[in-house]
Length: 173
Image 1 (cartoon, rainbow, N blue to C red):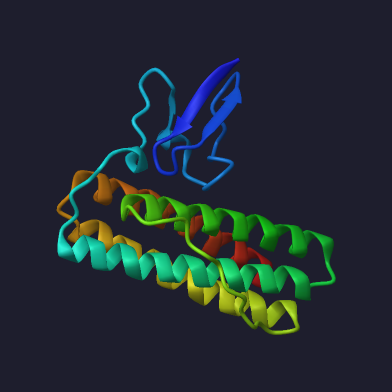
Image 2 (cartoon, rainbow, N blue to C red):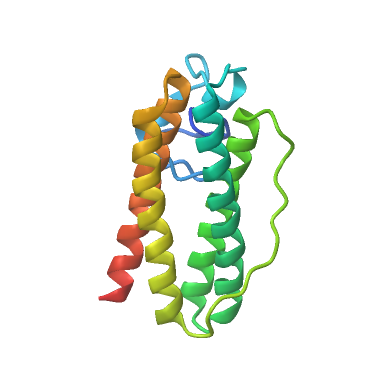
């Protein structure tokens, strides 16, 4: 058994091989490193520029909103697969929010409740809009960051959010 640590969220995975994606935050396999060489971005004190602080705060708000919405959407669906998917997405988005709070040196975020539609298709469309927005924002935030850690962090996140958008796009077809 080996210990793999995610460079994005800092969580550890135990297994013989690295999974294709971090089971906690959804980061791609290239962000999972053996514990002997891992250096999670959220475990270091990073001096943030004002712009990176603003971008991280914007992203934190977005991730908290997504978490709350996905919890609501999980409770609205009568399909076990859709319910499970939204619970998984909520956990992943909450992990993103926690990682952002660590980068900002803030306490763990509190997730408020949110309202959502009663039907899956409307919620899929809302989810796709959220995820597409996150991809665009995080690509921009990665380009704007002057700090190496913040660039890598947002690059990893936009890939994860693109995966979520692709998942929902497939459900809408």
